[in-house]
Length: 601
Image (cartoon, rainbow, N blue to C red; front, side, top):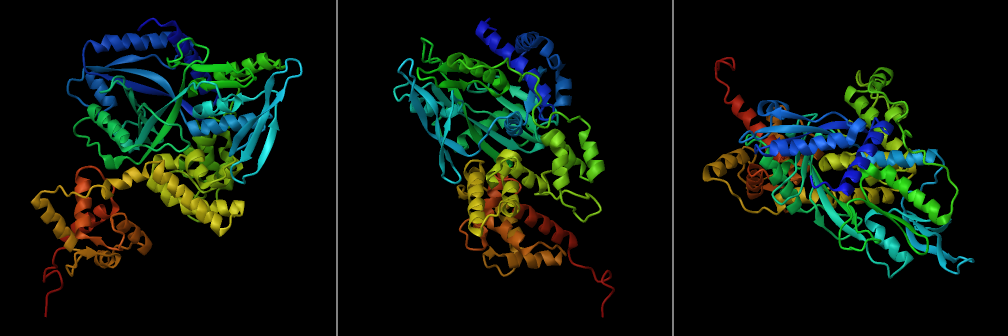
């Protein structure tokens, strides 16, 4: 809107690269319609003009033309949208991709074209040697460390490129301690909530939140992803989502959804924080202003740095960086061949590939769709590894957890794709940890068991892997913030009649009025209704609510749980749902009448 030429060129480049991304990884990326709801009449032509400019800049790369919706049509497509004062909506198309798999596909494609790639490797220091022609020190390689074994080794090179995202300045300081910092890290928090919060194929964008940040609300992996925040942060390898950021996103989501839809804190299934490496241009006179795009710079010792940028333009960023390296170090190379170069899995993929997986291997439809969309043409290799279930259907493919389509053979295949840890599997090969931390936690023992067999882990190594993965879920994926909703909330905000109702429910299990219930108490009640639950599973259910971890749930702990459930801070509490279901079952049974029991003596 401000006729900014630099912004125009940046958008044009991004749209060009977006089209390429959809072409080279068709199994991992797809167009997604995104709705901008409009609540003021004057905003309708304003936003429409801006989005039409977006379509015009895209030109032949425009995915689909944007369009205006009436209020009724907007509510038809997005029924959970807030109706009050809604004027209409504008829909535009953007691309969505599986970022973790895309990252891996790029690395695997590079390896197949001759690149040597190393996982879990860090730079200890840069190697330098004196140029005989100029007498100046030049970067000539790096001293590296294998993070898993601790072994150090040298890599010698004609050129070293620093492409380390938020850690850009760490490498630049290794080259020259006096160099000024250019990276300004910003934390972005995302949350995952159940899929029923958004339609299957329509996203939502709020271009102007209460504090000016943009919030999106998108269908993702049959769930809903919402974000993002934008706050300055310190650089860390293990960013942690903060409770205030999670609540900010939830409050903004509430502004756009119908009052009928209760947005509950307890519905947050996972939350994580990522670090954006925003940069200032070291060659710019105004060193304070943040560069909107990426920056390529070359130090006096020949270290080439690429910093900033975004996912969509990764390929053009790489091309520009290599061009700078060729020029600085007088390397011989032909023109770039990456435009249109299919990534791993893209070659044999078709939209109907999953049908062949169902027909050839006897996989569940949902599992086959997941494998096709994740591995593309390589999905058949994963299917071949899948074990026979012994059931009538599916014939092969045992799931890691029942509600997600991830199967056990994916763990074995992940090891072929350089997975070294259990965290790699739940976070970087599958998306289970990002979709539901509790489900990931449940799958961990089996994942560790499979990896241990493949990698010949000792019992100690298995314990370490399990503990590290649990800690990852607890700290970095929002499990701590989720579990603390109960432990932090000691107050009980229930009305007297509600307290009486929940006490009555509690005493259906606490027959002796002890003031607490144990797994034995629950089992005895379940037996009356002919319900069977595994003892270990029952122990886990009670343990979620047992705040003082004494092996029993006291009345005040139960009332605290019900209070948190009512406030929406906790949802899907297994104990709360189980006790309510059992109470209703007992009430339905009631006393058996004499005539129904066959008379009497």
